[in-house]
Image (cartoon, rainbow over all chains, first blue to last red; front, side, top):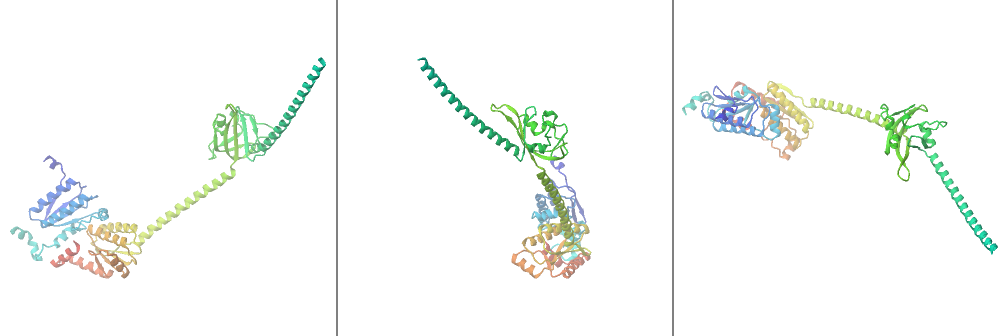
Length: 142
Length: 335
């Protein structure tokens, strides 16, 4: 328990049915592991339709953290939550490409605004457009 | 009996005399040959084209040839017999840089007098008889007698004026060359930068649409530069689309293709999208032959089509009229 208290936690903000994780510090392996657990728990509650991970404050992404972010996105999608990573810095993007780690299967957006718009445009599979707005209710009934 | 004795004594003395005379003649002959040898050695020494100079331990000149007198400006009337300590009087000794004074006790000959062998010391020398000064290359060694006891020192002086001048000229030339070289490399760097600026302009084609016309050969250096500038520009302008126009690329190889793939991936990572346009027939042929996987790329015929494609997408996104099928299509294309 003491260990957990000491671990820095990234806040998960809930906004109109979407989860927003804004990472503005340097990431360590423990912080990322913790974040993965927290996001999984938040997704499990069932009222989220999208997840945005804003990494605009991250200067360096190493291979482990990159993989963890990808795992986080894939995990969230398996639980029915689409994930968009936004705000990747040019230098970080170049490094990832040079190292051959390209976040496969993860959507990206320029900024938070675009990420939210992109999530809005992604409808649940097989759901007509006009029903999308009632996603929460529909999900609640099910 | 006595007479007979005397007679024999006389005979003996005569013979002795003859032997002595012969010995004397021999001695004279050998002396003459020695003298001749000495003369020839002396002549050889006097005519040596380099200056040789020997002193005893207190600095009195034992031997010095005319060349040394000429080179060191020793007056013929006054034989040099100065103790070592007084060599500094009336003469100036400088190091090879022509400004540091050469301490008298460090002169090669003075060091040789202390029993040291000095090879190739360079010094500049000037006195009243040599007012213009002279560059000397000096070699000095101690003189020892048969028992190994030091009796003095010998020095050889070589006028190194010509060599010195040559060296100075070479150094000067070198300096000039280095200067012109650095000037040239600076110019080249500046030109390269100018060419880079010119060769990869990033145009704002429409709201949210950037265009990157690529002209000429793309090497790794240029592609890295291109990627850096393009990504920075995307983030700065927050543009959602980039059209990379390859109309100006006549030839492409695997590494260039790889560069473009990386560029496209990096653009995708920061959240914008790439459209490739204007792929020339030769380039397309090469790409097919090389089996480069451009599969996940959007490639269109020319810039016009590229822009139209971008505008259609932007329009769809902005009005929020994404139909399910469009979303599906995008998912298929971009994930």
